[in-house]
Image 1 (cartoon, helix red, strand yellow):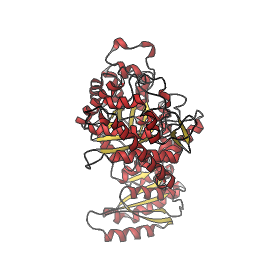
Image 2 (cartoon, one colour; image 1 turned 90 degrees about the vertical axis):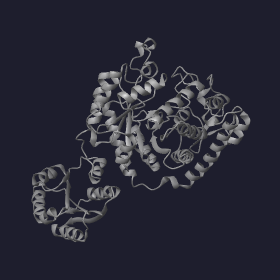
Image 3 (cartoon, one colour; image 1 turned 45 degrees about the vertical axis):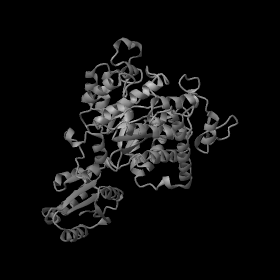
Image 4 (cartoon, rainbow, N blue to C red; image 1 turned 135 degrees about the horizontal axis):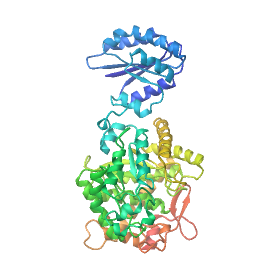
Length: 549
C-alpha cells in the first residue's frame, strides 16, 4: 500500500501544483488524499499519524507540503513543521516539499525533506521520483538503454524523439550534447545526408558537392561513434538512424555496433528508384528490406516501417494509407520481428481533418493489432507524429499547430511521440529548435493525459468501420493478382510490386513513374482523402478496383 497526502501549508492557498503532483502520483500507483489549501501544521500531522497507525509493514506513506508565499515566512513555517513531524520522520514516513525557487532554497537549509521541487522539474522528472526512479541522471545506467525497457520506464508519458542532423560533424556533435544536457528527448533520430545513406561503403560514388545535403555527413564508423559519444550525458538519450538505401545488412551491422541503433527504421515500398533515393528497383528493394527486417528480428531489436505516410504525402487515398500500414506490419511479422513500431503520421495529406485522421489511424491499428496473435509473440508499439508537410511557414502558427496536433495524437495513447519541430517548413532544426519543440510537445502531452476520449466520437467510429471494410477489399484484390504458386502474396516482393504497377496501390504524385500507375485522382471530402472519378465524385474501393481490373 502506497499513500500520499498533500496540502498547501499555513496561510498558502495556491494548490494548482499540489493537484498536479497528486495526479502524477495516481499515475505512478499511489493512493492520494488532498487536504486542501491553507492547512494548519496540526491538521497535516493528524491525518499522517492516523494513516501511519493503520499501515502494515512495508507500506509507504509520503507527505507532500507546498508553500508559495514570502520566503522568510515559509522558512519559519517549515522549521516548525519539521520539528513537529520528527516522530513521523523517525518512523519512516517520507516528506517532500514544493514551492517557488526562493522558498525551495530556504527549505534546502532545513535538511528535512527527502525531495524539494522548485517548479523547474518536468512532469517526467516528478513522475520518476514518485516511481522511485532517479529524476536526474547520475550515470548511463539510470536511464534504460533499450527501447522497450525505456517505454515501460517512461509510461504513461511516451518516449520523445526528434530528427536531428546538421551539415557538419562539429555542429551535429555540439547540438547532440546540448539536447542531451537539456534532457529534451528520449531518442535522437540521426539525420544523415544522402551519401551517408546510399554510398557509405562506396566513396567512389560520393559527390563532394552535396556533402551535408539533408543531414550530417557521416563518412566513417568513427563519425558514428563520435555522435554516440556526444549523447552520453544529460538523460543519455537513445540514438537511431534510417537503415540506408543500399548495402543494407552491412549498414545494419554498422549502426548496431557504433550507435547501438535503438530500432530499425526502413520502408517497404520506398527508398529506391521509384522515389529516387536508392539504386534498387521496386521488387528488389522490397526483397532487401525484408532481409533487413529478418536481421533485426533475429537480434530482438524493434523494427519500424516508416511506410504509410509516404503514400499519404503523395496524396494517396486513406484506404491506401491504411493498407500500406497493414502490409508493413504483416511483413515485419512474416520475417521474424517481435517488437513492431507502428508509425502513424497525422496531417497527411495536410488537408485531412482531425476526426478523419483519428479514424484512419484507428482503422490501421485495428488491422495491425489483429496480427498480435498469439499474444506476446508479435507486439505492436504505437508511434505518432505530425505531418511532415503540414507545418505553416509562420513560426507562431507552426507552434500552435505543433501543440494542437500533439494533443490530438495523444488520443491514440502512443508509446513513442515523434516530434516534428515547428521550424520544419523553414529550416532544419537546430538544437535550440529541438529543445523548444520538446517543451511545446511536453506541455500538450501533459494536458492531454486528462483529455476526454476523442476516438469514441460517432463520426470517427463510422469512418473507421468504413475504412476497415475498404482496406479488406483492397487486400483481397492484392492477394488475387498473385501468380500461381505464390504461398503468401502479401509478403511476396513481385506481387507487392505488381500491385503498385497495376495501380491497386497508387497515388496522384506517382504520375509518369516507371514503377507505378499514377492514374488515381483524390480529393479531400469532409476531411477524408478519397479516390474520385473525373467529375470529382467519390469512388468506393470496389468500384475503383473494378475499373482497374
